Length: 206
Image (cartoon, rainbow, N blue to C red; front, side, top):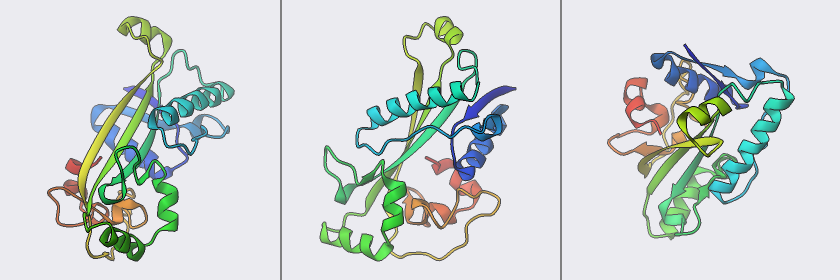
């Protein structure tokens, strides 16, 4: 059994990570199970590299405060971003790293109108960056000169033309009707990600 600590304030993300780790005999503990300290600070900045680096430094501080031995324990945190091609440029992604806050301020009609005004391109990609902290003894064994590794998954697709009504999945709550998953149709699928069965969702899970 390999054990990881996941720094997240989202119970949905924690459930998702545990689901993904189970077939590989990876047991994932939530940070709040280990300490009452707050989770890491995630700055609202446009640079992905800088955001991940600042988030990592904050995560280290919180682990130390929570008496989690970072010299011997692995931990991860995750960041999801979205690029809507019609609204993005070469140097700026919309909504990018700010997708969680953007979703709170945007409804489907507003998004649809913005896409039509921008030429009608509905292509989009969803990206997940997972940062893995490497304890010192493993850095030496693996001959790494970095404190952490970043693993990236990207899923391409398009924004649905018609907003769909469906209930969030009670067993697999990341398949929901609240996040960007309610508008995102992955390539190869005919329905939005949030409405898919887990068997259809797994192969296109960013």
